[in-house]
Amino acid sequence: MASSRVVDQPSPIMFNMRLTELLKVVGIGATIGLISYLIFVILDKYVFTPSLCGTSGLEQRCANKESFASSIALVIGAFGGLFALVQQRVYRPLLIVILTTLSLWNVPLIASGASSLVWVVALIVILFGLAYGAFTWLVQVRNLYLAATLGIVLLIVLRLVFSS
Image (cartoon, rainbow, N blue to C red):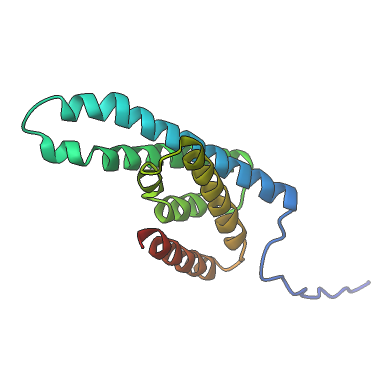
C-alpha cells in the first residue's frame, strides 16, 4: 500500500486577476459612470425641475433637486454595475459596487457645475473607470476583513478628496 502525504501549499495573499479582466471592469465602470451621468441629467431636467420647481411653496426642494437626481442616478447605476460585475464573474462584486458608489456619491453633482459638457463627461467616465478598477483590484485580498478595511480606507481618502 502506497502512502502519500498531502503537503500544505502556501496560498497567496491575493487572488490573481488577469489584466484583461481588470480592463473589462474599468470599461464597465466607465460605462456605468456615463449611464449614471445621463440618468442624472434626465432626472434633473425632465423629472425634478418640472415637478419641484413649477409650483410655489417648494423652493427648498427645488434648491435640492440636483442632489435628489444625483443620488437616484447613482443608485440606479450601482444596480447596473452590480449586474455587469456579476455577469463578468468578478470576485466580491457587491463590495466593489458599494465602495465605488459611496466614494463617488456627489461626483455627478460636483461635475455638473463645470462649463464644458465634454470635460464633465470625460471626468466622470475616467473617475468611475478608475474607481471600479481600483476597488476591484483591492478586494482581491483573500481575507474579507482586510479587503473591507483597505476598501474603507480608500473610500475615506476619496471622500476627503472630493469634499475639499
